[in-house]
Length: 428
Image 1 (cartoon, helix red, strand yellow):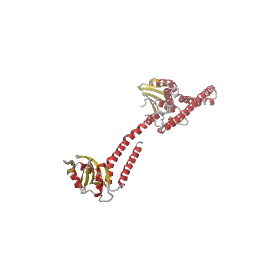
Image 2 (cartoon, helix red, strand yellow):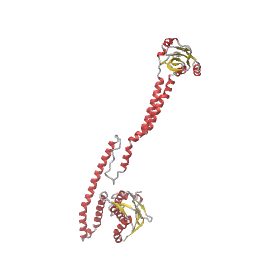
Image 3 (cartoon, helix red, strand yellow):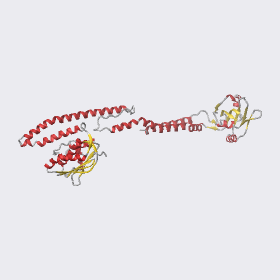
Image 4 (cartoon, rainbow, N blue to C red):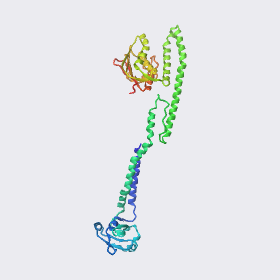
């Protein structure tokens, strides 16, 4: 996000820099300039004579300037009007020399070669005192002058602006968008088991605030829809309980064999109603407390043991390692109950329940579950076999309870060909 503004800034700066240099170098205002530095060299070569007049001493700098400029000439004048000339001063400048000390700075440029009228006027400090100097010597073309000015003035400004873009722009962008990281973190906390959460609008940029409000409004509508659905399921399940209970009593009292055969279907309907209520209770009746999974598993298996014995099956409990755990006892008991019942219904003749730290494994010696179906069996109302007597909600309820405890559940194959359902509540 920052790269594009930076690239844009660099392009604008580069285009501006090149344009300024190009326009300046193509601008023609009448020939080359006289180098202003010659006035300083000339001033340092002028001294006073004994009678107060001016004299020129051939300093090394002046000698070098003269060697590089064959047509060197100049006039120097002090504040009281005493003057000294060097070289052949053009006749056209005679009138200027009379009042030279009234001037301080000027660039005089000739229109045509050999540019012998090109000169510079500068006021300089000299050994003889303050002098005004009119001089012609080393000439500088406009292109060279512009390039020098660009390097001395424009280029540092360009580099400063570029440095500002590299350092300041990312800092400003990061500071402006600092609230986005917080919004992202808050959005990550939104989950089906954590409804009612909203994204904070306090620290987001003004441009993004409407989007955050729209997301919050959408979350509110989703929560409202979920709550209506939850109330409907709970109400429907409660309303169905009474007629199903009456129907079960009538079937138990019936003498006809055809009526008695309805008992299994009514039992299945009753189980479905209870599981729908279990789903509804997940969000309303949870009470976390310190738990001993070994004790919880033994209690559930003890309650189910008579049913297993009556059906000719066996069950075994193994506690390999215990670990302190905090959770909702009632919902976890339903998890173990559903897993054992599922193993009885679809498994073989022997079920093993093993507690390993904060994990529970339920293994059976049945035919197993195909690899392609091991994830789908957790979907609501999905049955491995259409003729199954199950409600199709048991494993889905298990997954919901486990995920609300911060854990996960998955299915693998047992060594002997059966099925192993592992519930890991450690949150790792």
